[in-house]
Image (cartoon, rainbow, N blue to C red; front, side, top):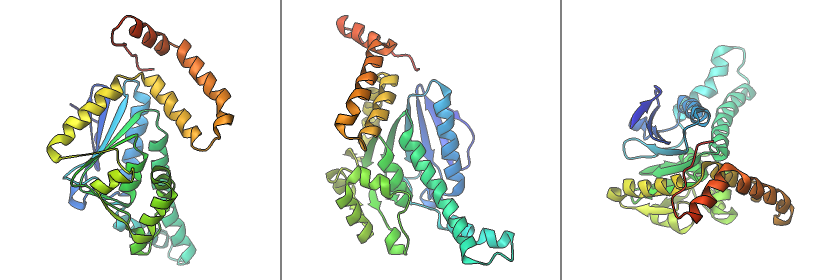
Length: 278
């Protein structure tokens, strides 16, 4: 693998068309600071504009994925407006600072949820709060047997505000609500049962399972993957009958495009297709 870009809170490595993005604050179980949020956005934007990247892999350093938000950052955000303006001791000013921090994380989740690149999460150890939100936006979520999923916000007097839509989307309303009102703690096995993750593997099998998933993704056409992700995102909120005309156009464009023609010829010629990154 080749090291890419210098970050403080991340490590980014490239292996062909795959970028491995590792949350790298192991001393705090990769708790998500404002710097990490900004660096994740920067890494994503760079990958999307690179032209050669097809898959992003998210994982954490030190045996943990992410222990949620960095509470020290939250405290600093609460105090910063008042420190900058001693006269601004009004509660509303502190609220604005906290809301801005929370919004930045929500925008990060939306950006990863909407990326046209394939997104795989490798989940080990603590997967809490915001880390759970990132796990929910992944196209493929692979868990280690060691993974423990927590939604602790309500037990801290907080609200899982920005990740709530992604929890409902991944788990459905009933399971998401159950986790929220109980400060839910879920084992890897139970996470598989409720559909939070797609597979669970022993520690010594996790990298091999990831390699298999990456090979499967890379065997698919990148443009078709991006178009399918976009269509499925619309299908969540659009009645099927209303989507039929647009879906037909999406299919026709794909069938007449370079990928559709290459895929059809490869099938007829009994060979593997050769995909070009759009």
